[in-house]
Image (cartoon, rainbow, N blue to C red; front, side):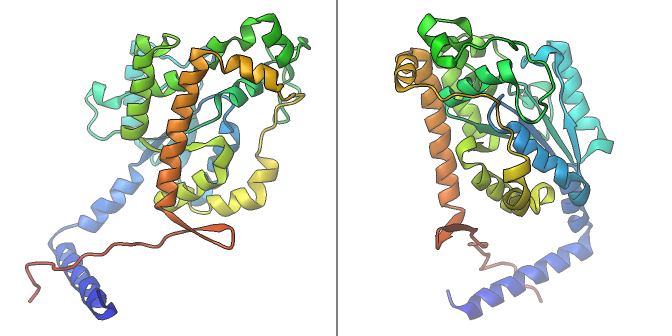
Length: 320
């Protein structure tokens, strides 16, 4: 396709768009769609979720959207049926809070079950399952540098993660790895049945079919870059903000965290639960890398978002 033909095709598209603008307020309708947008980030604990959420808070005034934290009692990720109804109603009808970015530690909720025509956009970030558990283990005991004065639930317990695993402690048991799968699986009882193959299959299905984008903690900057390219209404300026400020001020670090030994890791990896959570993590990572490979190009070690790589042609009927 020559540059001349491309130019003709673009000209024909502009003519048709102008003609339709005269026929009715289609352009206004498109703008209304953007202003009606809602994003839900159902954060998995200890996956850099606070670091990413702070980017959204920093940009909300400039990009003109609202950020709301979903604070559930005792951080329970499963809502009661009546709260599910209230939540869906709030999200869909609270016009004053649109466009809106909602975030909280809640498992996936299927809005279609409630008769909603326009579902929100789901995004999320997941992490290597053992690294996530280790981080959470020390977080409960020592907190982090985000709110250093806050007393944590297990404060005073000096036992290392290695010691916990060696002694067969409950806080480091393989069952504690079972979190990312149920967060993506949702509110069905089977989702929270530890080791359920059905739950993992449902989590994979939801990740592919119900989530706009799922990133990984280890490649958070690339996740932010893709969001900015695809959803600039919310994330315009996010990549530069993360590169210049976010990596230093936003990255929340768990205090006193000690990396586990190879022996500890090997012991956890013998568990069927780790194998399932790791399979889900690898599945998400492969999907994220596939999306990234088709959205960016690499030059001199840096990634750049690809420009629009399609156009329209052979447009009929021809304008007079």
